[in-house]
Image (cartoon, rainbow, N blue to C red; front, side):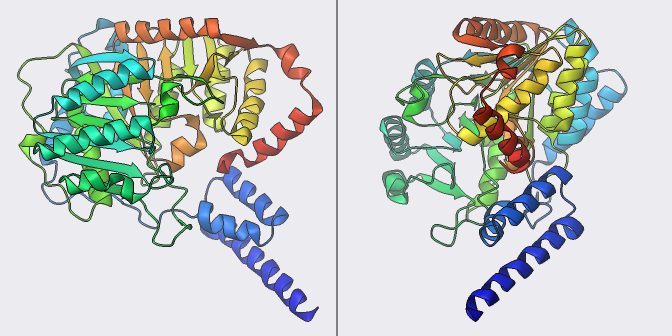
Length: 482
């Protein structure tokens, strides 16, 4: 009995100490602090272990330390572009983008997101056509293929891609594959052995040195990038796995959005891969013109900025760019996201837009892949409905697209969900598109998806079962740490 009392005393003291650390030392977001205090209160002992795994911050303030001279020409170009924007001398291809110079400037200042407008962009809304073209262009690669994926599964699609990459490595093409250690936790290193033996390089992002326990599990590289010969880039919501082809019986058809880019915006994707690779790999990549080949002829006329954010920065660049887009809206805002757990700033922006007469529409999945996130999402949808936002539940399959379209002018596609995790904890990258034609194409996709949706009404929300109300209330309290 004495031993049990001592154990209880130790757990209690540990909870008090950790609570003090949360409140007085870490100075984290108030909502997240209260959420962790609840976990410590209701799960003593277990809550402490959960905090060690999920609650810690990254200790390094600057994960990405550029060496002297590294990407110096990019930094010089960004500084020059900043001056052009300050002087009002930057020319834009699409006249409608004249009123969005302030957003371009903000992304240049906050993230060094160089604005390019010589790009051709192709949109994919389903996996078969995307992977058919991507695999074909990897087959045609002459110099290098760089891949970064949150999920890379050991299944039919993953096996096909690995076989193709192994073949290209044997042909002398440089192959580098970076996968997230948490997102791809079900894949063993043996799966990648044929590629490594063929000369390819495979590295995991933030792996654990302790089996079955990763103290950096909370910080996930959620990016999905493929760069081929430094000339073609792919980015969006699709990972590498059979479920992304609609083969998961539970989730069914997989609705996602991905982009294929040609033009100088690919340089920015390549630079992003460089930084993530050099953070993770024992052997650093050296900057070379071979990875940033000259593009003498414009591939198109679409304006793009590649914006990245993560726990290595306090600026939350992608969230701020979303907020900027929403506050600039005059007519309509169309948002698709699989996980909708906004912070107060994002929720307020959407509500204010709707109350100002803007047609605000939010589309989320009608079926869950993660129940707690699904319940939390519904609690926020109810709040939007009260302000006049129209909310839709996609029922054809699973909605995984991450798109935002404003006024048929500005649009964004990328890896970031509209949730606190994507804005603060995950390493994410989005493409912000300054082109009316691209915005119209993405808007038309949204409208087409409405045929496969059920609109949630206020009456439906108010009459939901008591059990669902309780689930929403509980997960809403925990939403800052989901």
